[in-house]
Length: 346
Ligand code: NAP
Ligand code: ZN
Ligand code: ZN
Image (cartoon, rainbow, N blue to C red; front, side, top):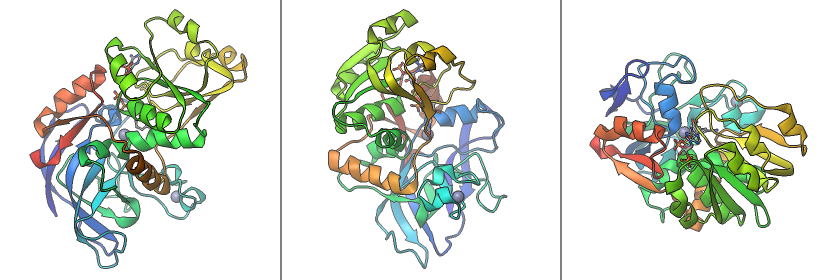
């Protein structure tokens, strides 16, 4: 299957037009025409090698939605014309305890990423969603509720599930006070899901201009932090903090805003380690943990929940020639709240 997309040939290289071939359909494969592809900050970290050496040529993109055009001989889960989505991984070992319990993102052998790695054969470079066509094993694709508009759904495939998963794990619900640090692509989905679960949500941001949007999304409070003293009024306020900040910041002062036994979930993945003060954790028996996307069953559960509650991402739809500019704006925290590429423009 011949497709067109965008590629980076070298670290931090420009994204250039690229024509390449997706594999012929295997029995369990589904081919689809991509309609929209979201831009995750992780794409930027990887293209720029901010997480260490990456694999090039790289076609980024792991928030992919489209319409099924062809199915393999043994496919039962999809039919031609269905709406389909693919997220951050395209396969996993399928045998380990994690895979068998639906936590494919934590596969013992490592998940097979949608890009920046090899497919399970160990030699074919996996190319991601910045393109107009895709081929996926049916077990690693999900259905998209028909009432949701496709552009707004694309970011759910990474940003959405990445916040939904810890929100479910930590049983966010009525009576809980939740803080979302960083109102970007991930953060705004965290606000929407935590509000839908019935929690009282506070957005902690470094961008004053986002207040009205945060309140419109259902947050009860919006706090701008310029210096760490600004956190003092929030002392011992939150049960749970969802930290989606993409840059390295001093998290110790934020730990002070947790109640006794409160938890901060690290979700953002900056390019360098956090320095954590033991005292900030001891004082109030705080927990510091992390969470990475979500497994296949939960990905479908999240989309069904989004369908029932009419939750989509706030998107700015762009053409393929705007992606480099979109990267700059994302890094400058000037994204409201996810860039999504119209795949017909590749
Ligand atoms: P994003 O849209 O760029 O949002 C990040 C937000 O962090 C910004 O909008 C900004 O919010 C805040 N921020 C950025 N720089 C800051 C600074 N210097 N100080 C304070 N706040 C700052 O990025 P995203 O796509 O949501 O991704 C966020 C992070 O999560 C990235 O590191 C990404 O790689 C990672 N990620 C992790 C997973 C996972 O599975 N755990 C999955 C996807 C992505 P305000 O303007 O409101 O301050
Ligand atoms: Zn992502
Ligand atoms: Zn596995």
